[in-house]
Image (cartoon, rainbow over all chains, first blue to last red; front, side, top):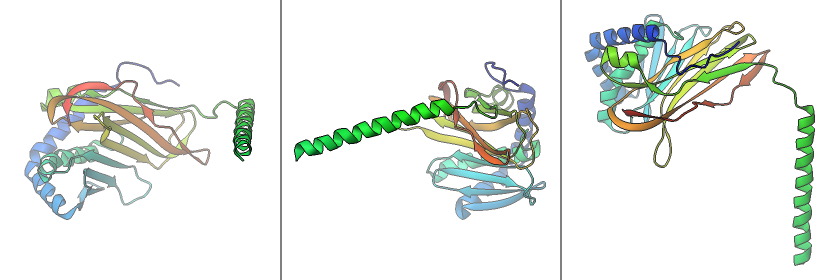
Length: 112
Length: 158
């Protein structure tokens, strides 16, 4: 049992596939993500269903968190948080990236 | 009165010293090797090559891997990216993956989804932190936070 020490264990093939999916989702849904960003800023929380997963977004003073989960408690789940800063403008600008990232995580498979 | 007070302080200090020395000696005497060999490896922060090439923007990324020589369940594996600040550090992103089912002995669990988009090319210093908790042998075990070997300066303002 060992964790081989290299400079990095970046997996280029995995990352390429992930980013291609991210790019596809971001370009297909850019206006939807912008609308969602405005809605989230107003409501502070938002729940979406993507494939078989629920995604709960919550906005706090400094950033935004997401909780990806399924109805079954025995399924894999994930929580993320990113720092967005205080200003509304910055939140509006950065949230679409976060929505695209979260949906990519769901579609790519949590833990992959 | 002052001598009495000084004596009391000296006695108290001596007592603390004796107790702490005794504790250290007894701890050393009963020290046993860890029962599990569970590791977390967290890579240094880096700019993701794939994101730059395929998407045209830059992002700072931290990868981590966890491995354990015992089966475990209810694993929560967290990776954080921190930015060094002038006065204090700022957490910029965190990603926790929760796997409720059993994980086989020596199975590598990866957390490679922790990244944050750069806003500009302003040089900033980043480091990563990873930690995990799981149920091993029906006991809830928690690792200490593992920090990346280096704090890396990257042309990435967040």
